[in-house]
Length: 168
Image (cartoon, rainbow, N blue to C red; front, side, top):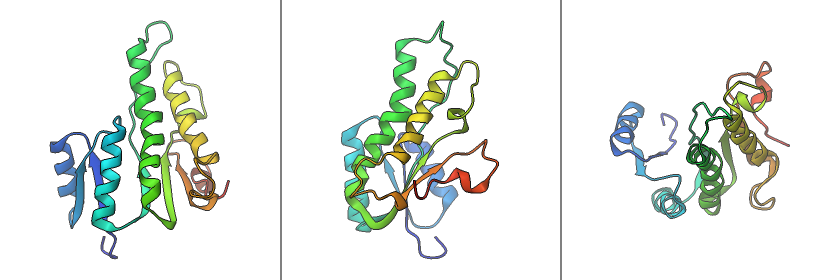
């Protein structure tokens, strides 16, 4: 923001959103939105467009993580994790894609778990593998060219360049 960037943040909980806005400081646009609601995501994109005109960067960071042992994981736990980690990313990108500035970047937050096996984390790993796949297989090649797709994959990368898939 010191270099003129305008920042918008979203969150479901008003108190947490306000804390984040204060922590970031400056002129931050904070929008209450539920990543599990397509209508809420579309309203978020509309509000950002009204405030900024267009987006240069969109960072899809919504996610949940909890243990999901095969023997005891409920359907509700499975759906909750997949909806938050996969569905919300897909529909967030769908909502903001029309307001992305040409040459802008969409960054998807994956995780190291999609590369390694961790007991009790198979569903989380699968959800993050899906996010990783979104980066390799664009939603719409014309609207979201390869050089604007990026994936942040914290945690396991030994090579600094491997955490971004700029051209795939």
